[in-house]
Length: 433
Figure: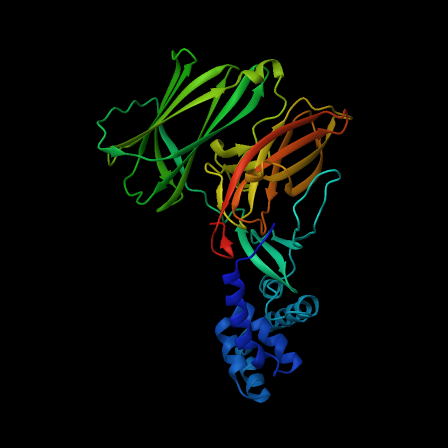
């Protein structure tokens, strides 16, 4: 975890310097009111601080609440009192926790992240202290990093029922589409390998489209599964249409049940309105899943994992999982990780698994740990379904490797799996949508 951009700090400094002289001429009570107003109504806050006398400011403030529920005013003043006391001691004008608390109240969950060193491992030079605030009802997560004496909001992300995932819905099956291509249809594809049951694997294909106009749009999807000798084993033909979105990114997922072996997969989509066609080919090795030899699945970076309403194609034992087909994200943006661990030892019907996620800078050839997460899982059964939320915080742009080490605490056996992701420069306070 490293830097906030110089530009952002200069912009923040200029803005704060313009307000600071007026702010510190206010009475202490007026300072609290101004900070509270700035969190919920920036126009009123600006007008309030521009008024020349305490009498004018008092009248203006009273007028704001004149036709509102008195209970709202009481709650507002209780919040600003607490926020000012808790977060306004050192940098009241620049600590973003203060306006967040005033606007949303006490978080459902508040996590503090402090520098952490693994025994015997070379770690990065410094990790800034940080906080993560989760509001379950609102479906919001705020990431703060300490810069100087203040905590700055660097990312806001969403989860839950308010997050609608645009996807391709199957409307017909076994429908063969054969048209002449009039253009190239582009899409991105990735896959994940999991154990379905003994000597049967689940190959998940993840697809992402960028669609600019969904009016009257539908797709033909053809999936051909071949063995390593290129003989066709199975073929699927479907018609799909985009739903839950108009002009945005759409997701599709296909789950194939296959015996452990090597396969060639051909995936093609046809835009039936514009006659555009796109095709991708994948070579997949599932041999390691023979006789339950593979005891940990692929590690899948995900855009979202939560317990909200889902579609069958995105369903996992822990909830809906929307994969990051391209694990490339703006700096600061949180993302999720999904994996399954098999054949765990159990005691009284429950397993005890310790997970350690180690993040390495790929350019440095994994010589030092850039970040780490450690957690313990006590769950029923001999299979662990792991969903983790990772906060890059101020990790700088670059290519990274994340290693999941899953240790069975009942027998000491460890299983490892890896994934890669890239952080690219992006706007500060980046939203997840």
